[in-house]
Image (cartoon, rainbow, N blue to C red; front, side, top):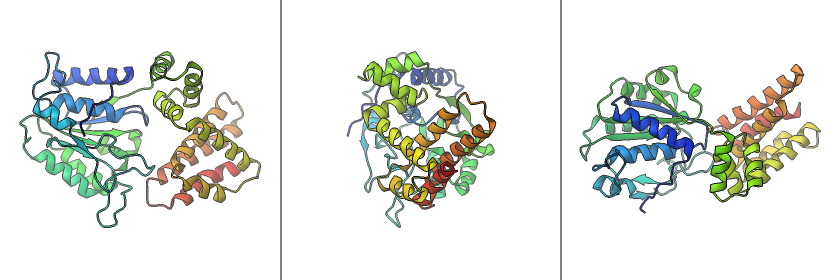
Length: 335
């Protein structure tokens, strides 16, 4: 298939312009952490930047021409079989792998021995990054490696990645897309530049949601429920995220009243593969309930519930059985 990248949202455009200015000034480093909340558009931003760097005949302002061999190869995409998916079931590479020989996309791949998607980015993949960046660019320009999500790199692979970071070469770019930089080793963070995507102002987010075709009232409700995150709000409106959020709120109330058991709810929550979404809603419910509280004991209890939900989400990315991970997050709501 031929890829037509979606346009950048205003907050993504600001980060893109910042990166382009650094590239043009020769200040854009070998390794960069692309940081921002989940669904804020880190991958889209990285793809736009990669297209610009890999274009062989950029326009006067440095933008990708869209017609040269580099642009055509960049746009030629394919999904691998069996499908590569994240632990939450989302595609590991939303727009597929590129045919461009100087672009490497690294994420959750399929374990060739088991035929199942990996829950981590493993050392063999990181060695592949080192090999790619150690070669001369086949089209004579830049080489770009995008790792998404960087939090999925396991610890032995981080050690292998460190060597690559310590041997930068001109025209080689390694971008680590990360929602929670604190989960990366300090030795990795300290060797990377940082490009941040932040939540936009409320009015800008609403205007963007309205531009996506959503009615004002539903845009306001979804953005409020998503705590100002337009990407999450958009996904909830497009799907059944708001309905799922109401379901999670009802389940949390049932737990607190002793009308449901955490283990039973955990089995139901993982049955349709949307446990991570439910846990995200659960964490947001704790945050919302804690807002403005002055009762310290209650605030601590809600903080524990928030931490438990996020810890359970983290466990879903590991080999821990999903229902046990979710049950751990739910138990805190039974107290």
